[in-house]
Structures are given as structure tokens and as C-alpha cells.
Length: 236
Image (tube, rainbow, N blue to C red; front, side):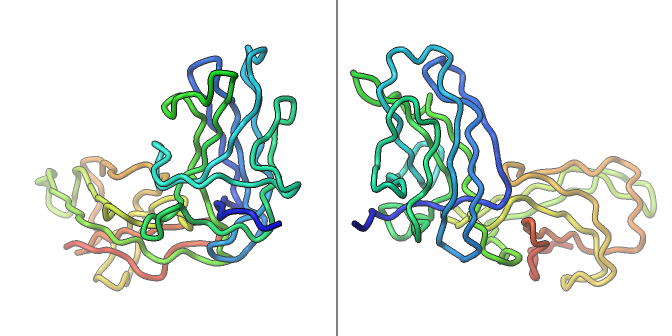
């Protein structure tokens, strides 16, 4: 039977832990389907240290860490709930990476512990970013704002904080991080990488005394395991 829409994960395995003993730990997922917006593969976790009251686990993909518009994933065995003692889910074949609301992409994967009294609160659920193996470099994300104020007054040097903010609703599923580049123009001529940070970061600090090398532009790219986006957001 067909499963309801599900989520996507990445060629890179991510891990996370949760504070309360009721939550699972070591949550990981690697997307084994190299096709955009389709996810397959194993979601795995370590059960809570005190699991005597655990009945089952539910796995969701959602827009954010709060499980906004979350869609429950199904196992290839046609089960949508994983019983205690089974600490993994083999995601249903051809699962679409989407939430219950079309305009909100699935950017996160969450695992909830269920007891006789119901599921744990979302703040206690284990969660990781969902990385969709699209088979190629990511498209550049829509960036709502990017700014840099040079606080280094020495000639030929720059320093200060570079900050950026993605659009409020943006698909993060194909990217794993950002690259910040110094270049001669907005197209990236003479590119010189100055920082590479995870997707959760939205700022970097250029140390005082960073050589400008004649560059006039700062460029922001996104990347994944295949490489860097072909376009960038730039500021002078």
C-alpha cells in the first residue's frame, strides 16, 4: 500500500542528542536516493537510557525543529510507528521530501518517543537537519539580507563580522553549509575562500588584519558534498 508523503535525508550522516532520558540519542540518517525531493535510507537511533516505559517511536519530517507541518514517515514494511526494540526505520521507497503544507519544505527530521501517555513534547524529541542527496551541487538559497562592516582601518586589510539571513521560507534540504569568499567582482573572479561554516551558522568574524589582496566583493555560496553552488549572494 502507498505510504503518505515522507521526508528526505542526506548523503552525510548527522548525529544529535537530546537532554531528557526519555529522548533517543545518536539520531542519524543518510539519503541513499540521489534524486531531488525523494528520500530513502535508514533512520537510526539509540534508545533512551531509561526505556522501560517506551512503547514505540514516530519519525517525522518537518519545516523546522518545532515539527511545523510535520509529515509522518513510513517504514518499507508499511508501518508508520516503530515498536520499542527496533531502533531504526527503513524509509518507504520513493518517499517525497515534503511537509503537509506545499509551500513549506521539509528541512528537519525528528524522532519522538511514545509512552502509554502519548508522545513526548516536541522540544524533547531528537532532531537533525534533513539533507536530500540531489545528485549535484545545490542551488543558491534566497538570502533576505547580507551585511559586513569593515572595522579594520589599516590599509589593505579588512576585519569584522559578516552576517546573513536566509529568506523566512526557504528549502535547506540540498545544502550542508556556507562558503564565504573574497573576490574581485560579483561573479567571483579571483575568488579566495575566507571561511566555510555549517548551515546553522549565519555569521562569521573576519579577524582584524585579514589581507584584502585587492578584492572588492564578499560572496556567500552554499555547498554540499558535491561542491559549491554556481551562483552567490554578494556585497561590496
